[in-house]
Length: 309
Image (tube, rainbow, N blue to C red; front, side, top):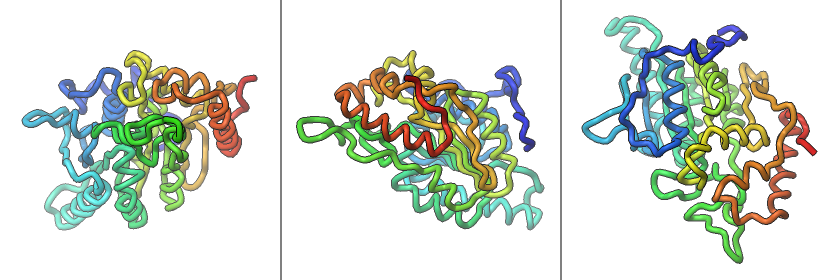
């Protein structure tokens, strides 16, 4: 794919829906929007392997499905391993002439729990073995499907049912695991971050990943109204604030070359992002400034502009 974007406006996106109506996602579910957009970029010649998680549960209530492409459900921890087997199997079938040689996108789909935690070993192995597949992590920063438990992608200070704040706890005590950097450390051809609040950025990254030979990893930031405790109509705004404050940066790493794809003119204070979410309402001004210092340091390393004020 050339450096120029394939999709220049929303009107350029295919009208065909491959993640269709009828799913059971919550109102304002950004994971559902992320998957819908990704499938528009991937097209019908796609096989999806979906780990247990929100997307799997909302899209496959027996006997119904919201998938208009071949779709496999696998265990929480092995989406990358199953996708690896499918990719290898397709190569054998094409080599033996059992099926025509053609481009088929193999996609592994898992949440942050199935990626940053119990699926990390399978993901690392698949990247190291250089399977020609796309791994998409839909990151809503906790195990939302099973009751809003913390994951290693839960940000510092956040409330979850297993990291409740109180007299002796701030909430989540550790900082969010940087899985895109872990993927990039495998020196794979393509790593990117995305958010449905920036739909063209997302679909162009998925389209680029589909055209690259070898493994690609895309980490999609998906604000969750239910788990993050904000009104569903604010989901897109929360995603934008995550980017505008530097809490989540949008970039791509292609053949080792890092490039920011969305660069706010000036970053907003993290307070604007934190105060809109109930999971952070317990944080003191002192703790918010601690988070701001951490974000400033990370943004400086990434080359993002200084924040306002």
